[in-house]
Length: 580
Ligand code: AMP
Picture 1 (cartoon, helix red, strand yellow):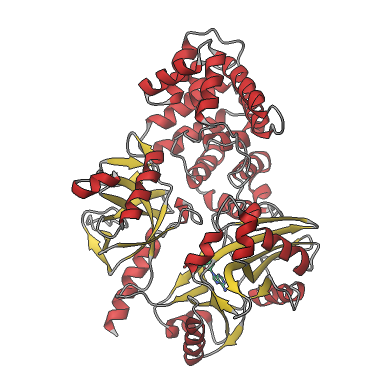
Picture 2 (cartoon, helix red, strand yellow; picture 1 turned 135 degrees about the vertical axis):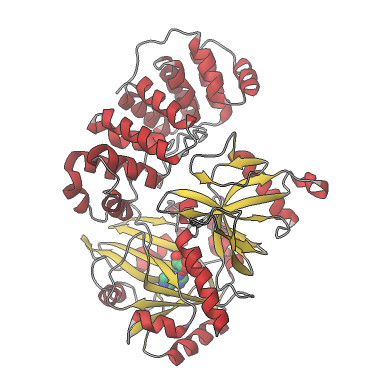
């Protein structure tokens, strides 16, 4: 496929504000593409040249891109920037300049992809010059619309508004005629997090190919998630007569991938964080006894002298890009391992929890200082849950995770195989809600100073791949938090409502749904205004008296926010709670 054809599809995607149309446009695109291009197209749609978890970045800032555009079309950098400021978007500036230029030949999708990948891989002396000249040559070999979209890729400003589930729907529709294969495709995606790989396997080998996808060391697995239940009695009903209980550590989740001496770490939102935690990497080298393994644990700052767990605010200081060695000495982490997914060449996710735990115990050094096994107790009764819960809470931990003994590891799924029991928040609502920032209200009065007066947030409807509004938040933010929202929203502002956002309420401006905010509130109520979980009678759900607990941009993607299904459950649980 010629890149200009792909650029036409990008135009169509950009032009719609309806999610169903996104699916149709994408499906049409996949039908027209060669099988060998499908994977690359999946990455390009998301503005990437590799799966999102790979740290392959094009690495060009605005200035460098402006120089490349100028060089391609015989303009100075200043002229390009002037036009860019006038047009408000660097892509539109590139398009206008390209339209006055007769392009040389025309590259295919694969041709453009390979050039962009080349730019991402340059390193060492003369990198800047090589990147600029390769991009400028590339811009001369595509049409004006092509140039428009290409320059947005290095700057991460390609805003097509397409989420992973939408791509999976479109793949199913393109090859199968309807969307019924999305769950099958999701299965392959949950194991590898690699949309390109899933798409290409599907087009080459059909559903048989997808079903035979296994975990691959180095490709992050979408994490298993826990359900909430309002009482220990209800938990026992779900988990059976015998179940495991582990402390719920309030740190951050880390997935360790080890293949001989190559070790990678991934965060909860599947970002490669290996560089940030040299102490954990060293710990895995010494204390994990396996040729190859994928294991999961919670990293938490820990004082080995006093055996004290430090609060989340301390642990989270370790999430940084600079001075990582210095911080590793100041605030050492301990990784409490709680699950094993892969061992010595074998995907063991289908083994029951009990068996996986045994294998995990067999590969973690007994006297290790960095990698420790999470404590596990096999329990049977409500009173045992309460005792263990009180014990861990008094040690400063968050609560308990209860686990079903015979359950496989359910990648990418929330289910009753894991039940979380957290310290109850003040008020009736038993848990906080992870919301997605959808829009911003301009500041009035004192708040003009921050540029933000309040925000509109939503939750995620994973069936429809849509973000639906659930509350406005104004008074629950501190001055610093307002400033932070302002900084974030400047980068994510979009001209009109993104196609995947479904809201009747209009903020002053919309942002790309990307940032997750953890929000506490007193109660979930029914609401005619909000679209979260809206039923036939027009009634949705809302959060009453919302307050910001923390920004979760470092560990959750928008699609990891609380789902509409969870909101419905929380709503009914608070009723059960009150009846008691
Ligand atoms: P939540 O983020 O409240 O949905 O809780 C689930 C998170 O708890 C997981 O993603 C882990 O990061 C964390 N966690 C802490 N301790 C454990 C444990 N023992 N087993 C599983 N997850 C744990």
